Image (cartoon, rainbow, N blue to C red; front, side):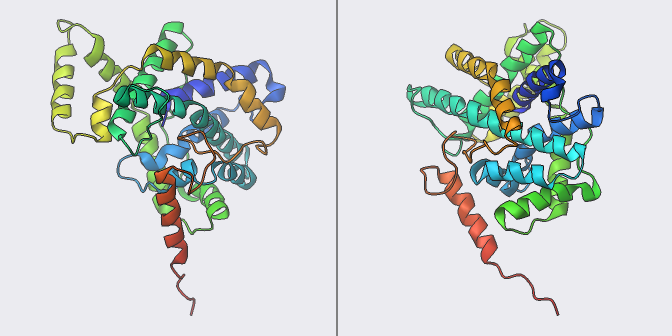
Length: 316
């Protein structure tokens, strides 16, 4: 899925519009807590994809009723901060739906020489991650060159203690499953702390790719990353991260074109209270759900059904 910098860029575009037209904003940007909650929400659907976390929360958020979950988060919000988190989550959903299919086509071109053939992450996660990180690196450096000052991922986790109930209520309402609040809290806090380091990780990858060997401090970085890549498993996400690939020009042109109208399309969802948000698969951009030619959706749907079939313990 598109990485943190892409979602920070999309958030930046929305914030810029809402500061110019505050009457159209669904959140109060003059409150720093509200802005930070939106940014956390903008990265929230990926929390389960962080290494060491249970992937279920992110798999259902991407493949099963993503629009319904976004609406549930908005309904369950009990404060301006929780509303901001819900709107940020919705921005992630729309961003993935619009941009990730482009990455899938880029992988198809890389592996098969056919940009009209979409290749899903489950088919080759290393190639997917390498291009996703490359896209993020390009967006990051474009933002630095323009002087726009993109938002950085928040360093302090959003959910603490009972705050996680906002997310658990929305998940339970949408999927009819019990959710372990403590496990969700750990996943969120781990994701937030790791993502806060993302800009530095991109800078290290940029040093490896583009700096001259004689520049002070560059050679050890290259040696370290080269050594790490040599010991990673072929086909793994980690190897894809370390072996970042800059996407071809047509990918960047298509991504930039889609970003240009993002604010208008998201504003239409804001004006409808998210009623206009369809249940679309965040990887393919097509209708979400099992039985539609997306194996990862079939697998998570089966897992959800297995969990539902487990009888709850009786109360004495």
